Image 1: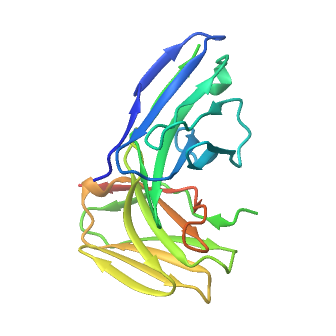
Image 2 (image 1 turned 90 degrees about the vertical axis):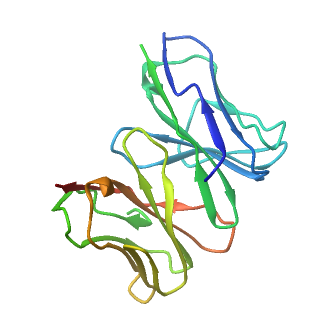
Length: 110
Length: 111
């Protein structure tokens, strides 16, 4: 079983607030990813990292930013939340061809 | 056109039925093929992983890859209500390359 954690699991917040979604893994994986997924819809890659101090934007344009200061930690930040950011955010890490997902954070921006 | 196509469903079957889930793809460089299962409000979990063409069996699940047709399948035998979930296919080229996901097929197994 994968040891990848996301907090908070659920977040309701007002427009304009700054939020940080946390993701951590204890498996020592170098590769980590953030996906956005609307209910019943496909996964969209928004950020990825291949190791410490490495971050790249994914296929889906996103107003969020990420950082990778430590191998085990890959937080995602929204400087000013908007209703269009309402979605589920999934963090993942990978070793070889096996990618492990966290439980997700469901974000609702009012 | 998407690189990986998957019928979104929903696919509704009675308990005990054999289920066939499929993906087609356009990138002939894909060599690694995976199936993930995602329960509602959860993250996807890896079910099956195959490399190149052929079959792989794990309990009630069989993954099949036909690279000549660019077509992969997941078969579920003796389906159970607990199999009700969304199934996503994923694939990549060289080892370590970014995964490309299908949109997922929602499966409902009725008791």
